[in-house]
Image (tube, rainbow, N blue to C red; front, side, top):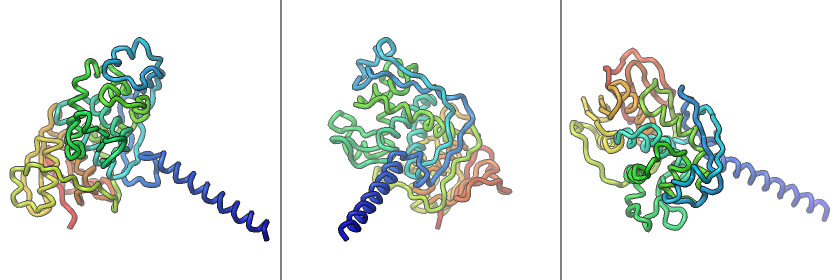
Length: 333
């Protein structure tokens, strides 16, 4: 009897350990794990990514130490192809917000990749209500360090702009490795962790920036992030839109900017966007990508750009194309 009890306890321990291992694997894999994947972003054609992992001398280095990185740090370099990415709708929406704000500020692709990779490391692209000490939000910015109030840094739009403001103050950030540039802004105790997100951040930024036909998609039932209570300015021309559409258009204007409402009635609209540095065609694709990335959180049922229409079943050709440079959308319900 005693031996049976011992075997039973041993079996129970093994089962619990196995379950713990599975949980840890899922947790550690994070955005790249398939168990919680709600959205997919296929690999986008483009140059390979040069990932530079700085040496141990960079750990804890602040902005003042960045000038010495090239001379004193031992770095390893790896050239990789930007991969397909699987992630949650929450993560995709926040990545699209960070990228859209960078586009609206006419910042280069490099800045937007640095920002998305940084947020991926700091928060897993989640708008966290807390963190280490008084850290808050996508970039885990600390109110006590002058980043803003808790409410401000908890707003992804404010937080993204604050990150870009700080990045632009770093002398020579354009020629730095992603690790060095991110560390000059963040002052992390683990700066070398940023580099691993560069390939996936590159895929997201390329897909969301309008240069190619869209392929990103989120499945039906994906869970969007909790709404942010920050005030947004209503968009002109949306007087006949319902409340949900009005909020979505105000968010699009706050993030991507340059929004023109061609028509809006109830939960349906036709839009165009002017994005610095992009043609009308690319700006329309960037807007359509932003809408798909926000679909789960804002109840977007379908998006049409050029002759392609998105639903939760994916992208398909349509015989009712949008006019050149324009995007049409319909909300659920």
